[in-house]
Image (cartoon, rainbow, N blue to C red; front, side, top):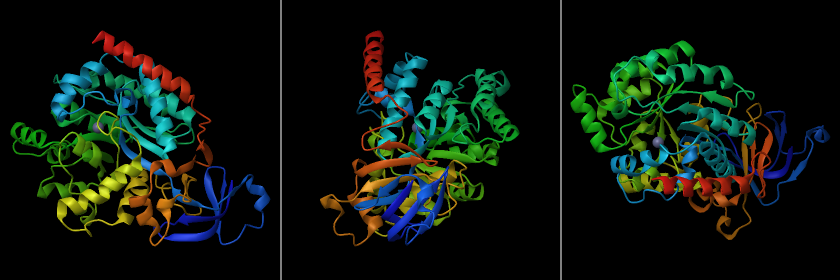
Length: 431
Ligand SMILES: [Zn+2]
């Protein structure tokens, strides 16, 4: 595709106007102030008038099938929400429910400009197949919960993770990656955590986990493990010798920052979910200042309740000022970086997440003809503070259009909506 005479946000998060952007295969092949000489080779010419081209968004922490739990379990703190509402509901979900919940999530994410996401849930094979078809990128992990102390090699996930690796890891030209999971400190034990850390090292895969989401989780971890916070606990067991994404990190203590930075751990900041469940607000301004890779996540649809990551950007930007009483605590550019390039890096996708020649063609295009986009004193500020996910009109992943003007070539959205609605009624009747 050749985007003609379009405005774009470049790799330094600056506005460039009247640009021509060509994609060939999976790459951004050309960016210039005029049409390339071989313009005809690029196929469709996309009229860039009234459009803003951005790097596609990366959602660094999600539970895609939880779309079918949207609005279920409202008004509870994390541990009651999990024990009383979420886990009993999830126990009734079939692989088919996971499949359609994921399809609905992919439709929603693409519609809001998300090109890739890091997902933690069950029925991994179903989720991976849906994402392959939808055309998105996913780092997928099968949720590991191990209350009983046992070696990882005896846990059912040991064999399953091997099978998932063989069938899916690196497929679809690298769009699909399999990560390993430790749900959290409070849902596992040191023996299994150590085993997962070693297995990830042997397989060369990434780890995705929850850490320090609530104050009580952090305090109880310290009581159980000689004063170690969840970050210190995971580090002591070798987890961070693997590239890791740690979701939340709301209740960090002073020593945790250097561990996260020195081990290269990415933090998936989920401000909407953290505030909705009353967990707190992560000190991302300090994480960023200390050199930690901070990405942005929506979390699942029972604690957000949507995948419009532009809302999460808005909340991330505002809440940092609210927490610090300093409007310069983080900048709009840092927020946009968290939602794009930092997310790609958190997934190990170093050739993704910014609009440059030679990078993967992961792009979203916004309609900026609406009243809230004028004037354009500061384009990135407009994206973060004035824009909405509904301004997205096109989402491209690896050079393929996966969403455009209300149409998803790889997803039967009407069927997904109907199947999810049916599943919810069935599960509720069984509870
Ligand atoms: Zn989560």
